[in-house]
Structures are given as structure tokens and as C-alpha cells.
Length: 105
Image 1 (tube, rainbow, N blue to C red):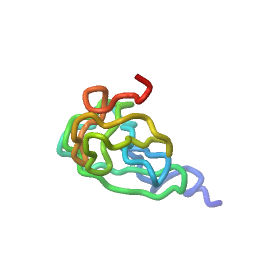
Image 2: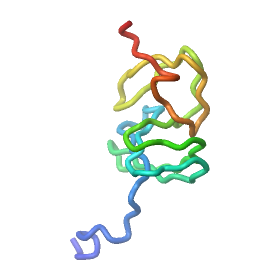
Image 3: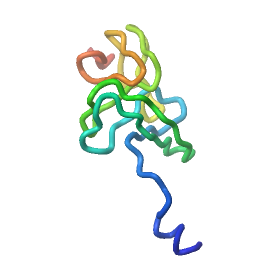
């Protein structure tokens, strides 16, 4: 491996991470991910990348919709069901307790 590759130079640092290509939400991994940002994301399972126009401010550790989600849809993170969408969420919008709830209760 060249020292260039070993140092990680030339690789963009992601704004968003998703685990699985099946995920319909991703997690913000930077502070200050603001609305109207063209974000760079990585899917860790296969090291593929994606871009997403972020429509809301997304706090670090919070989720953003990768597709339009309708009330009744299942939110998928880590390739797993993490809850039911209770309010429509457009692609690029903040996904949190105001629009997704656990299916346990």
C-alpha cells in the first residue's frame, strides 16, 4: 500500500453514514450539518457512496431520510427495522422522535 493510500489522503470524509444498502435513513457524523447542504455519504457495508441534499439542520448522531417516507412505512437503519414512520418525511429531512416511533408500544 502506498503511503498516500495509507494516510487516507484523497478520501472525502463523509457527512452521513448508512450501514446497509437497504437503509432508508442515515446518520449525521459531523457537527453542524446544516439545511440546504449537499452532503456526502458512505454505506459502510459495501463502501459505496451517495450524495443527498439535506433539507433540515441535522444534529450529529441524528438521522436523515434517504428516500421519501410515508406514514406507516418502516424506518430501516443497520439493515434493521427501527420503527414506524408516523408522519410523512421527505428525502433529506430530519428523522427523529417527532416522525418515527418504536413499534414496541
